[in-house]
Length: 109
Image 1 (cartoon, helix red, strand yellow):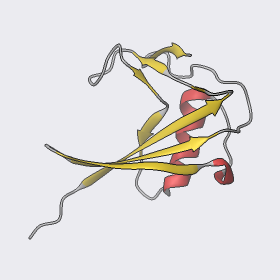
Image 2 (cartoon, helix red, strand yellow):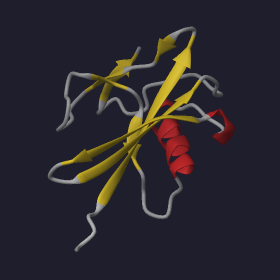
Image 3 (cartoon, helix red, strand yellow):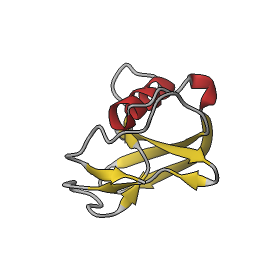
């Protein structure tokens, strides 16, 4: 039996003062106009933690240390493609949150 190719999605739930950072998707093929947390895909030859740190920097401009990340949820989606979604939380980071991908995100709230 053939093994499926599995895409790994990385989701980052940033917590501060009881709130979660959310952005509004813009110009995307999936979920345009809907709210989301910073997220992306694991790249080849990248660890999950390195991928989360990279995505946080690319999308929000913040720097997160590996010890600030905590796995909160795992979800498997079986459909046209198999996806494994990993949700991590972080309550501390360095830097100021900015919208670094204005072509994909209308802004962070």
